Length: 237
Image (cartoon, rainbow, N blue to C red; front, top):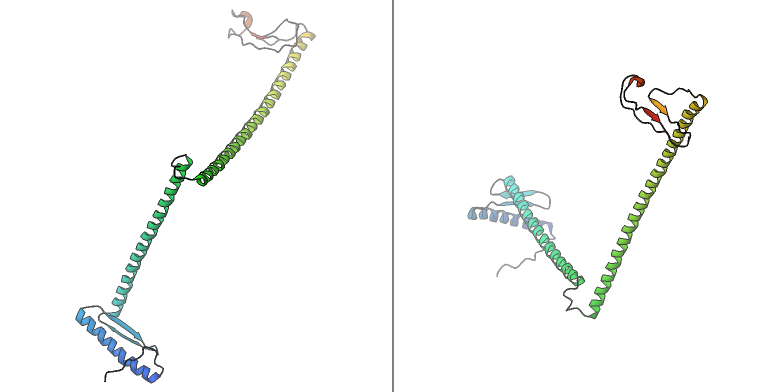
């Protein structure tokens, strides 16, 4: 009679379980050794019993085998990640290409091209989109014009303020001019031979409302009465 099959499940009896572990562990380590010798392969086997005891076999240094395993696993993981990343970007490129194609088709339809395949409902929907777009454009244009008007109003107010300040300065200069005129003619009226600075002359015109104008005389000798050029600073109205 042949050997009966054993069900692959946990052995409840602890003694039988320990005996089975010892037999199969020895067989596993023996097969690992045979594999490394027959096939010139690096083989490393580690087995922990239920009590935590370590049993191992390695055709080479166990440390070198573990380092080689970790390095190989890392390379495989990188290749897998690279392949996954390439696949991801390929899907993204395909999706973006499809979206671009749809946008180009919609743009051509909005420009009135390639409408032969549209029915009445599609044309009505397209017309509604155009009306909404036109309304948005008009709203944007109105906003820009309103902002430009506000900016022009602000500049106009600023220029108006500058004009007001300039007007005040002109009035102040006119008042100073009138005050100077009063002082000049008041001195002449009180004394016919009143003092007139050398190089200046007062007009004989009796009108006192006009502004005083100063004219630069031509450079001459130190004393005007000895100079051949009779031009001088003249105060006129």
